Image (tube, rainbow, N blue to C red; front, side, top):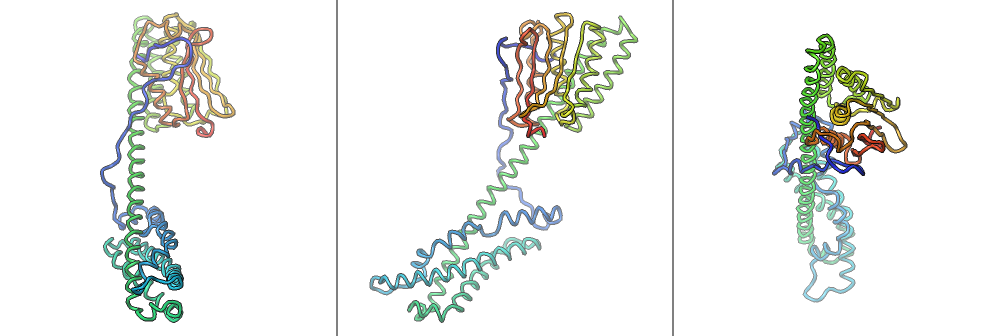
Amino acid sequence: MISGRDGAINGWHRPTDGFEPLIGLPSGPERLTARKMVAANPLSLTTALRSNPFLDHRALVGLLASPPLLALLTTKFGNDLPTLELAAKSLLVTSVITFIAGPAMHLSINASARGLRHLGAPNWLIYPVALLLMALSIVVTEAALFPYLSRLCQTIAEEPTSTMVRSVGAGLIYLIVARSVSELRGKARRQKELARRRETEALRARLEALQAQMNPHFLFNTLNTIACLIEEDPHQAEATLERLGGVLEYAISSGRKGQVTLEEEVSAVRDYIEIERTRFGDRLSASIDIDARIKQLSIPPMLLQPLVENAIHHGLARKGGGQIHVSGQLNATEVLLSVADNGVGPQGSARKGHRVGLNSVADRLQLAFGAASDFAYRAGQDGGFVCELRIPRDVAA
């Protein structure tokens, strides 16, 4: 049986059962080799390589900002305290080497790593290539600038080899730090992407489960209507069964698609109301008013039908009939869909259920349009029951 109407009469009500955590983060990132990624989607691989370089670009910014520290690491001072002049010269020499060799080293290593990955080379091969390029960048830079640097700093002129070794050591430290930062950022990015994919799959599975949950309730209630007609009016029962076949065909086919237009949903609602009219006759009247501008809006299937079913079986059945109104409006900020009846109201129904229909509509609305959408229900001003679905206009566009 579709949901009952428990709750206070005054004010809006919203289903209380919210979303629980769907899935945790994976214990380890799923990895694909470069060859498999190229075969699967070369464009995705290129994007991945650019977004996750071998050396993180932020580390280069830190390197260019650290000549004072590098000066202490790469400059050999005498036994006496360094003079201010020596310190200034060391800082200037270190800055020149850093600003020339640093970007050259960083960019050449990333370009080589990107090329090797694109060719499907194993990861271990990138590391010796990176070490070689790092050493070459520093050695070539210092060798080319040696005549000028030796005039600025006596230590370089006296011990060029020792100075170069210390520079390579500083480059090795940078290589380790930049690679570690890139690994950590890449791991976080992969975990976030995997979590997003798992959550999307879980949401899709939950939406399908909710859709499957609705079909048995709809079928059960409609078959009860037909059963009542078999002895009273067999021909009418046969015609109703044919209409039921059409509605079920819509429910099954739309469930496979996952999305239908509002116009298709309203058409199914009309068929369902006609099925119920076989039992209520002229005592059941219905009006449907949908803004033409939103007829092509994509919504989850069976979104309005359970609300109409709820209105008839909980609001109008005990009263012996009544009116039901389905409307769809496009406002400045939102799409407003509503189902209203003039039945017995929230506490007038003798049928107390578990709000399966209302909770399902709320869940599927939020799964489809996010937290910005809203589903609420209340007692009508003149009696009866009103359900409203609000979808932000920018989301519905």
